[in-house]
Length: 459
Image (cartoon, rainbow, N blue to C red; front, side, top):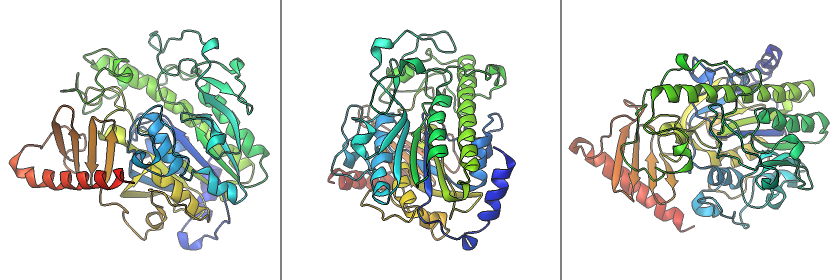
């Protein structure tokens, strides 16, 4: 990211008291796919290169404990789209339909005169227009099977993810000339759509942009081959060859992407490819931010960056995201732009579904009735956290409650419980459940989790 962008923004956003409010700023919401929160250089990863996201961290407010409540693509994206939990919006798993009675993210912006755009991956029911978006650009969806040809990933293995996905124009016509399934350049193709909107838009815009990166299949982008050497990649501290029990997705598609038991060599190679795909996506985010700068819209545009969930990548003997460990349920979440403090890092808990009410309030738009809470009081320094605890869930096999210090995970189908002291065991390597010393902590967390689930299941 060019230095002039950061310098200009630091001058404008030096303190919350010095800011002149921007009425109805533009909004750009960027969502990555399967990106761990520890894959950002500015947040402590000394190996990966992410200069564009680093720039957002430098000129914005970063939530270090943002939570994905339901770590699979469709439900997580439905929570972002509705601002409500999967227990309320009807999307607790794949193949579910969003409750049409609920407000959706673009609707309040449309009512205020914004042109609302959806760009990139669509993984909910229907099409974006059904959920309030005015227009699409570089829409990427399933349903391109007639053009599908077998692909292999960086290892030469046949891919199983995004088979037959295809770009579509605004009439929903397939565009096979742009490729079918994931291609190495796909992040660039998606970014091109957002850049065109920025360059051509003259009215307040709302862009909801969804990359497919760094979801598998991991295809090395042009110019990124060899960017990361497998033998130089640190192995995750909580790497083990196999998860000690069936967590509810033992034989799932994500878990068979790598051979069992896991080896350090295979995991290192996978992470090296994963980092290359993240860095390529980061370069495309940089291109979009530069386009906003060239258009003279930097000081009037809110940029939000997050991921739908993280990914195990060998941690805890897992490969996929269908789990309640920190590497999966903790996600990057950054707000940058007018009225947002620069270089601020927040320890308080937050949910992805908080993005909806937060960007409404930041944009001076009335916040609809949703489950999520506007994080503006935390961003502005008036509150440390809006939540005492956060709750997560995966199908009927996992339930989780997390405070700032403690995490309790229940596995009802196999009658297992885990308790982790995150303050002293951030990589969740020592299960304290069952130890008499921690019985009262486990019981108190379990009671709160049971009560929360009962209250929210009745909505």
